[in-house]
Length: 272
Image 1 (spheres, rainbow, N blue to C red):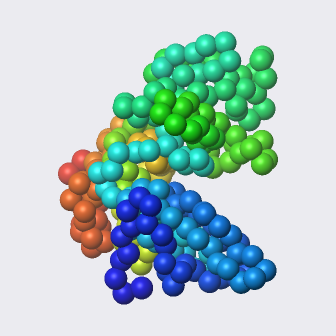
Image 2 (cartoon, one colour; image 1 turned 180 degrees about the horizontal axis):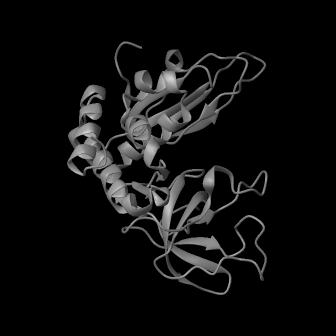
């Protein structure tokens, strides 16, 4: 498509903008809902937008989704990965902060891989979890439920569970979506699809220091852990967070992202 297609809540997705990969079922990303599915009589998928954003498609995976605008307030959506902070616990649930403007989300105390009443994690106030949005309810004030396991497998796929150590950095919801999409794209497609090379550049330059681990939440939170960097762990973590935030705030192009990474790492004396 030569020009981006921007949709508002309630807008219908034009049929000519849908991928046509018949070998895989159509998959919907965040920001869209399905009104009707194909029938033997030849009708096609009818999709509408649930939020404002730019329509993006992945023909190979037969996926269509909306890329939210950078400063949009996060609205919990089923199957989103989020980074939540424990606020308090009750008999059956951990009450978690997903965003400062929404009610606490509920995370079952047994919603962890292999958890039982004896082996469940004893999370305290302020600790972090990487979780998937399981349900959002209907209507104002509806409870949001989280889980740290894949309901289909019962496993903590994708690194779900408590996040220990590391640091949290805030980015826009748009940047968070780009980071997630870029990490799920093949290396050769990442540049073309997302224009985001900051993580791959950091990975190359920090490999000798032990690399790093990150978890990205659609709620605009990025957790970075550089414990393998030993005495340089704090400096490396701060450098990564700074690169991500400046790339987001300044909307840097790929060549500027590479320059930023080099500059930041040199300023912090992490590379020569």
